[in-house]
Image 1 (tube, rainbow over the protein chains, first blue to last red):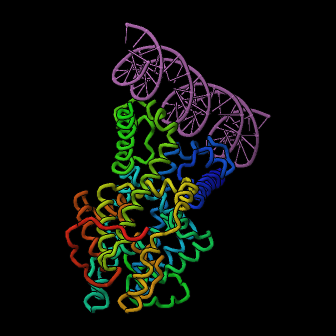
Image 2: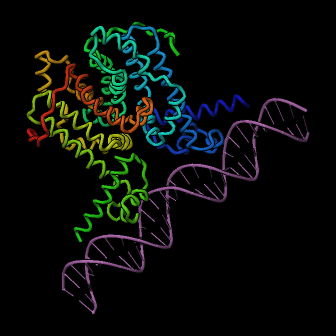
Image 3: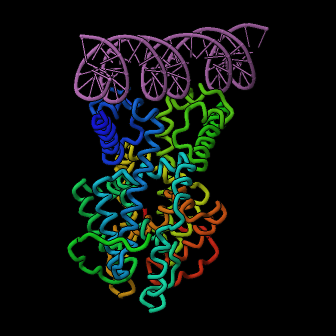
Length: 215
Length: 215
DNA sequence: ATTCGTGTTAACAAAATTGTTAAACAAAAA
DNA sequence: TTTTTGTTTAACAATTTTGTTAACACGAAT
């Protein structure tokens, strides 16, 4: 019983994620979601009460997963530049896997600003806090031009995420195939690092499990 | 007759723009649009045939206006850095006025990739072409690290537009009021220039009409 | 075997939204 | 004034989409 329940519930969420995050059907109906999962539409209401509550859950889980990924990297004990390099690598790769994830987050939060507000109120440490010290040191050592942690972090997110958000526009303007755009995004990892630090990106050591440092 | 027609038609479009671009109701119904304009809902169909065709028109006009603004600046004869400074200034200011414009463009083009494809096919010169020469010179003079015009342009758009796209998220994370976020965006003009060029942004001379240079 | 609970389905009801139409209306043209 | 043309409105129809419910299936517990 319990097993079945979790299976179907999970299945629906997984398939909904594919629809939203990979295929980009941001306004998918309950029917389309049910079809994708190969289940009866009523099950969506059985498990999630309403379409809206299901979206809430998806948004919440998605934000949570992203937060964890980011924090794991930013709160690690890696040297600053390697930390940022890994952040770029991870965010871009994640974006390649789920091209419409950011679009989902952004359109959902634009629609219901309260949701993101509640989510943010759960913990008071923002990601820019995690790099504040590192950044201050770099600036003191004159290894980077003075910049606030907030602006630094927004710059970084912008450079990583915008090309995904604007995929359809950019890809069309520059006449790229899907494959070419993929290559372009991977190239960008180096470009982003270069733009931020004005120097070549270091080779990343083979990915190993990062140990979480701070809360 | 003709006068009246243009008035109402224009009125509806203006109010729809407010709804979409300023208030961020990206999924506004025909009824909501009609209410905003204070007209009968049927008029929307009278003038635009269908909701979809109205959105097409809005998207087209919006893209066109943005293209003109950008081209006017990028094809001017200003020195490179001033050109870019003005681009940043214009794009950010425009974003302050219409905080959801980019969201609209992006969600519409994600929904109907054909629309943007057709729009782009109308002229073959992309904005990155307009800076190609300038950029090559800068690189040759070692005044900027080597970078392709495409990456340069995407960087620039990303840094300017992302903070608007992700407004609700960023504003909440960093706990800013609307006023504070506005200030933050204006601060960013200098930050963006700094990030791109690694040097202070020059003071912009008083805005004068720019003369268009190339097509 | 019967009961019970969970999961599942089809059928139904309700709401929201779009699109159409016929008639009212206003203003210019005849 | 009457006609005509273009504009506006209310009412209607059709569709889409969400949400509910009653019945069914089926394994587990009694």
